[in-house]
Image 1: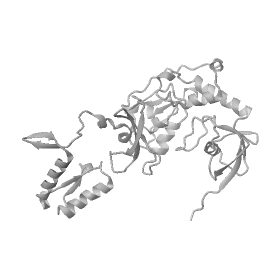
Image 2: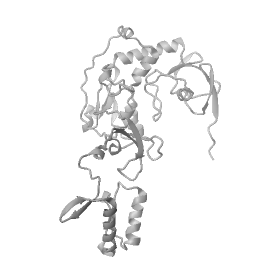
Image 3: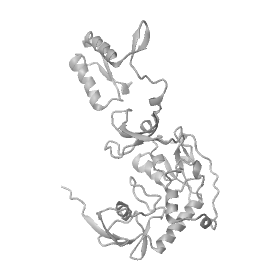
Length: 348
């Protein structure tokens, strides 16, 4: 039997805290409500320490807290003068190289760059001593669901690591090196020409809105439910505004998907409010389909089933049903309708 990770005691800014063995200093601090700025860190990804904002001081040395594992007796300082000045300089360089059209940005209400710059007290006059870049790079709008604005990108690498570590696709990479480094696809092709699956995992993790939905809408409330596209049973939250579904996000607490979604689950929700969607069962009368109540429709189906058995009957299961529902379909077909003629829509 594997042993539970032991508890490590350490001190952060004079406060004694505990953390499980193997935890990073950054995660230990955040778990104890001690904030450390960071841009390239994400709980779903392996730490890389690229942005340098999460630096802390340990025994007089500055180290990145996301890549430093807790040890017994560590004395960590997160906000010394040396650390604060290093963070401000790193943040000023990020902002100077960032396209600041915040009011028109999809991430304006949840931008990690804005939050950390406010936390560090960055003032506009401090940025004037730096020479801002004017990349003027074209915005990639080829994908039907999201767009990529490289002028807003801070080269944190979260999208690259997401596509590699979580999706396993490897579509994105660092293109060129040095001052001209940008995020792009193989051969720097557009998203629509690349191997991108449009799952949107990189979009939901982008901290600054460089990757953003094409039509961002903000929900008034959320409804927890299960995705209807296949039998896996991914947990989702539907964002609702009025009587319309405007957004979908993954449920991180659902073990089937742990917050991840495919392109259908994340973006394929327009059918819910589509004008062509059937909201009532239809029964054919005099050669025309007319709306009926569910009780009437089910009684009709039951009466037709009662008249038909054996080789006259066949069932077609669906990938949109759960595994349990598909099991019932084949069981009903064999045990009740006395035939083995059952097929599945996915094979067609």
